Length: 107
Image (tube, rainbow, N blue to C red; front, side):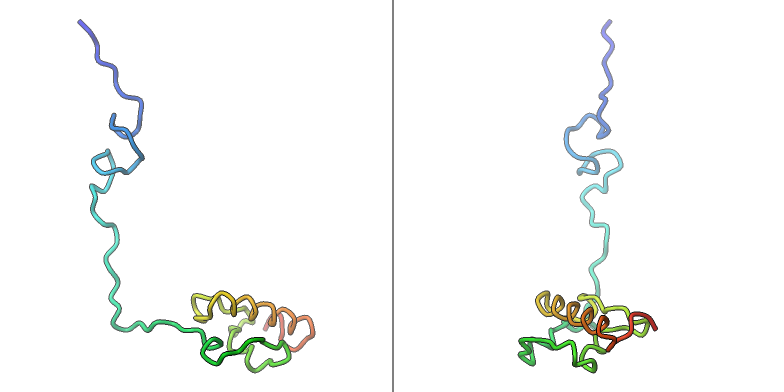
């Protein structure tokens, strides 16, 4: 009488990744998240691209204040809506303005 060996893989003997369809503990191909309702959301746009700003000056503290929160933290790109190129320039200008004491590090 032969004894059948158990599989040592965690997927229940079926090859593949953990959580694959049909494997133990998997979702069975169902989606985990519901689709978000897009009624109240608007697509963000880069204000600097719209105004065709090529260089952002660190001395223009009023414009930089739009990209700083009340605790003097820089606003992230996902919140500000700035494109990657302009977000890098915003960060650089804020750091220069902080160094020159035009903008505070902490409030």
